[in-house]
Length: 382
Image (cartoon, rainbow, N blue to C red; front, side, top):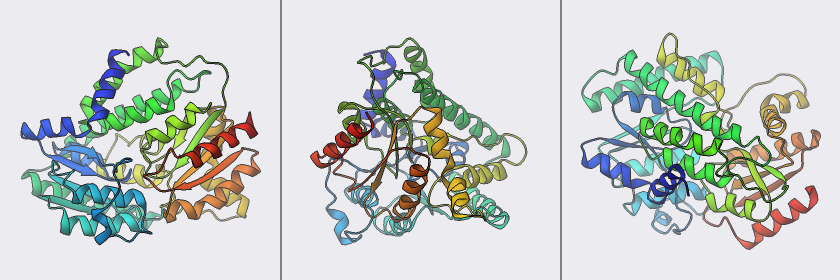
């Protein structure tokens, strides 16, 4: 294994290790959930944003006293880890209004998992002018909250430097996806999922260094799987950091070449503007450029025009990455994604893109049932 990927595996195996080291050095580590957590402010404050995740292996037990069984199993898993002390290394947490389950999580976390800092970012669910103005005001509230916590002002220059760092990371991750346009892809879907899991546990500058070290290795073809032709798939889904599922799909004979996931393209397929008011630039980019079912995009016109406006980017992904089929993999009880699923299936079928819809609990990914359904889907598109 090459040095860059060996480092990824080391970081990914124990995601909290570097955060604990930084905390021991006097750094403050702030846990974040969801792509809509505006990490630029955290970095600008001299803090370390840490992308929180659930556990694919650990059953959620402590959470039973706080969240019903029909709540999103990803949310339940994250809260269970918090209650068990797995996130005790965090100095604070920032949670945006992404969906109702995450809102519940914030309230329970604030009362039961004690940190010295916590903030709820109220993100609008529409993209109107009034929504944008509201969101900018909310981000200024967040900025002031962080300033009180760190005891100093966060200047516009601090924010511009932070924006540049995070934009650089987005560009590097997009380059990894560009490598997957090749046939065969120059890096696998499971490897990219691990890379994203690793860099989101590091300070952004360290994550960028890790990505930079990987680029020559990928360009040299060190990670190409040359075992013949295979169907090229896209995975669409929720807050899914599920390496075992991606591995299973690739092990049964497919190549995952692109995704539309919270832990994938949604977090990296946009840049924040670098000119003018940095708060306004962050507000505009997060609200208008992140494609997620939690945001309603009004589109007057026919039903088909509405589908095109909401899901046209998926078809564009399919064309750009020469996708043979799309798997919609939705975590059970994720209402926002489940509501969109029928329209997405209808839209993709109208574009003659084969689609498989899967719904499963967060902790039960690579089960025999899912494997059988994926294999059957691959047979239909082979």
